[in-house]
Structures are given as C-alpha cells and as structure tokens.
Length: 327
Ligand SMILES: NC(=O)c1ccc[n+]([C@@H]2O[C@H](COP(=O)([O-])OP(=O)(O)OC[C@H]3O[C@@H](n4cnc5c(N)ncnc54)[C@H](O)[C@@H]3O)[C@@H](O)[C@H]2O)c1
Image (cartoon, rainbow, N blue to C red; front, side):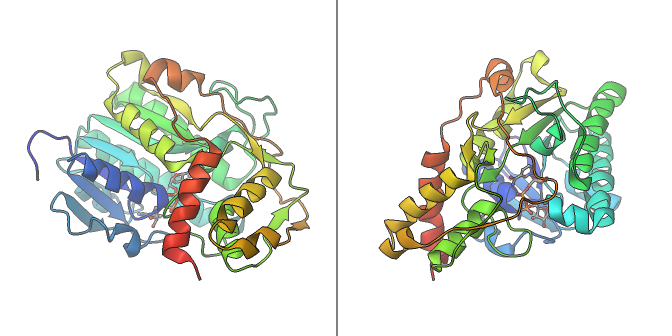
C-alpha cells in the first residue's frame, strides 16, 4: 500500500456506483478496500482494477458486524454504498431491505466509530423527499416516505446524525438522484430505467414507460456523483460536515425526453433504433410525478460544480453500453 494517501473503504464496491468510486480513487493513488457480498454487485465490475496492488477485496456482508469491523481496519475514510436499492424490491421484501439498509448501516457506523475513521460518507437517497411536492427539493424540507426503501434511507440519515452528535463521528450523506452511467446493471427485475431501456433499444425491443412519459427526474451522471463523493471526503469546511446534500445535476427531464435522447444517440450506432416504438403502461405504485434537486447547498458548502448534463452523460453511457453489451 502507498504511503501518504488516505485509505478508503468502499462498501458495495462491486456495484454500479461503488465500482466507479473504486476505479476513480485507485486512479488517484489511494489504497482502496472494497467490502461486498455480491448480492447485486458483480465480479466483472472489478476486473479493470482487481490486480491493482492498492486494491483489496473483502467478500463479506454488512449484516455481519465482524465483517464490518474487519473491513474498517486501518481505513481513513468510509464511502458506504452497500444497500439493497429499488423501491419495488423493498415493497416485495421489506424485511431483507431493512436488514441490509438499516441494520447493516448501523453495523458500519459502529465499526467506523470504533475504528476512529476520519469521516463516514454514505449513499442517501432522493426517495427521502417522499410525498413532499415542492420543487426544487431543498435538503431541509422532506415529506413522508412512500416505500420501505425510502424509510430505510431516511433512517440512515437519522442514525448518521445521532452518531455525529453522540460519538463525534463525522458523517456526510449524499442524497443521490437517479444516478446513471457505465457499469449500471441492465439485468434483473429491479434494473434501473436507463440501462434497461438501453438494452431493449439495442435489441430493437420497445421500451415500456410507466405512465404517459411526462413524469420527470433529475437524472445524474456517475461522474457528478464521483465529484460529490470526493468533495465530501476532502472538505475542510467545518460547516460542511454532519449534514446531507442533494447529489444531482439540478435539471429535470421527462421520461419521454429521456427515450428520445436514447434513441437519437443509439441510432448513431444502429440506425434501425430510431424507428423502435415506445409502449406506455399504467403508473407504478410509489412513483412520484416529478423530481428536481436544488444543488445550491452543495455548491455553496462543498464547491460542487457538476460537469455532465443528462445529454452529455447519456452520450458517454450509450457509448459504454454499445462497446460492452451490444448484441
Ligand atoms: N443508483 C441510484 O440511482 C441510486 C439512487 C439513490 C441512492 N442510491 C444508493 O446508492 C448506493 C449504491 O447503489 P447502486 O446503484 O450502485 O446499486 P448496486 O446494487 O449496483 O450496488 C450496491 C452494492 O451493494 C452490495 N451489497 C448489497 N447488500 C450487501 C450486503 N448485505 N453486504 C455487502 N454488500 C452488499 C451489492 O452486492 C452491490 O455491489 C445504494 O446505497 C443505493 O441505495 C442509488
């Protein structure tokens, strides 16, 4: 392991966001430890850096306190990404979602406190805004959670705040808004909308939009999320810690816009994709109509300056999916 560079533990490091964080911080020369049980993550997400001498993989489960204690040894910073994502998954199986997202989170907080890590940065979620209708979403105004998943992510914030106050553990929560980009899993019942639509379009299948396509989201490219994690880890501003931040681009696009862009960018690789029809179905339970983040707090306190709009991010993501997963 290199001298002088902080060691970072990335839980969920075999997942979409976690593996991108591993790759980025390894590229900056940091020793990186990844704790993952491969519940939804994949070994192939690690293949570009698995042999890097600064990388260490621990196969373990955050529901097991001993695994968390093992992983935090000699670690300076924790970036806690491990969780079971997906609102529908949490509706189908609230107990497992709670075990991982709440009990596992608490294990990681306890282990991090006891190991005296310098800061605990964690993946929070825009789902915490729940039924609050105001736009844009500002960190201080939340509504009632609309799913078991949303409850778990809100409980994370409550626990993090208590650990800051009670034990002096520095924490920063990043409320991610619809993150997308390279390595996001297109497979499975709980796949996110962008990789799922990309795969369907590449196979000339019709993507199915839940509702009329006028629902909107603040789609956030992975590189903006990496920037937020780095800022959260490195900030020296005392006013910037022990709080939560929207992690988004700060613009919203409808599902119809999204599909139009995807068809346009994918048609550059296969012109037949421009003619694929879109199907529309009923709205999905638990979905809010619109989501848009205010990113003013992150700009003011962390100096956040997102570089990728939806369109810029989609071009990059489409190119990655075409190269890696085209039929
Ligand atoms: N992707 C998004 O748009 C989004 C939005 C809001 C919040 N988040 C949060 O960001 C984090 C990362 O999400 P992602 O999209 O990369 O999902 P992902 O499913 O690709 O990654 C999650 C990782 O956690 C691992 N994991 C799950 N249970 C575990 C356990 N018990 N022990 C150890 N590891 C475990 C999985 O194997 C996987 O590698 C999650 O906390 C998620 O709730 C994501």
